[in-house]
View 1 (cartoon, rainbow, N blue to C red):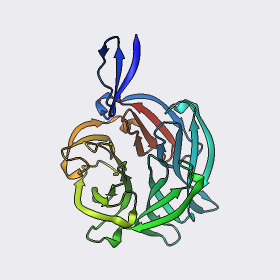
View 2 (view 1 turned 180 degrees about the vertical axis):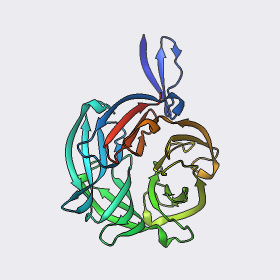
View 3 (view 1 turned 30 degrees about the horizontal axis):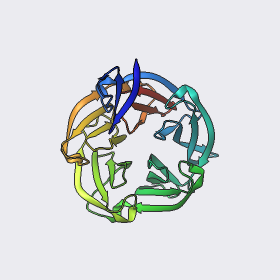
View 4 (view 1 turned 135 degrees about the vertical axis):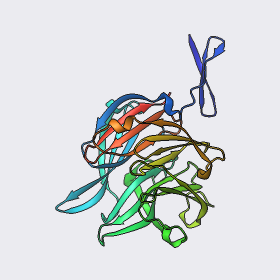
Length: 293
């Protein structure tokens, strides 16, 4: 009989009788299991992220109206954590002026900071290397966004980013990882003050991804010792030095995404590393759920 759950760090240890079962540690691609999928009401998805309790999902997609393109956000509630069959659409929202082509959302765990990569200005037809930050006055409610800050990575200098696309942060807001989709490098930055773009600096640390296609995204686990990269497949790396991507070593590869015919564009892994979602949308607009335990 299962008596109770003991938590130690990020592992979940069920107590069975007087014995402790093996911990559920997550962040292990060798245990990938397909569960189900969800098709969005909009076909051209760029990204999907979840609230860490699995009860909110936020989709980023590109849409148009009369020839005018803009980035749009679809917000959903889930009655069961991470269960795609329990999704209900709450609202649709346009953030910004519409000129910004945005990619790769990041939402802080307390739900008060929202980030995007800003890689294209539609109004002038120009590639950019900018990061957009918003505050949310009500945590996890994207309709309350305010205090826009735009930081241009080119002002730091010394890094020739030819085709900027991906942005991701670590959970405490002290590290930012940026990709170049042309030369397939990931660059590592630090913020001396958590979630404060005005304190950003380049760490002089990079990683050359052996990408078979686009370098879509990466996620780093809370302890900084595991990274997943989506680049045609999903690859798992260990880090000898936490949060230092120059110390990465490949340990697992998941090739199942290659069988998805509707254009893989992004992915999301929860903090526990027990849930992984593959996002397609070129066209397609489908999210595929996998467990990693």
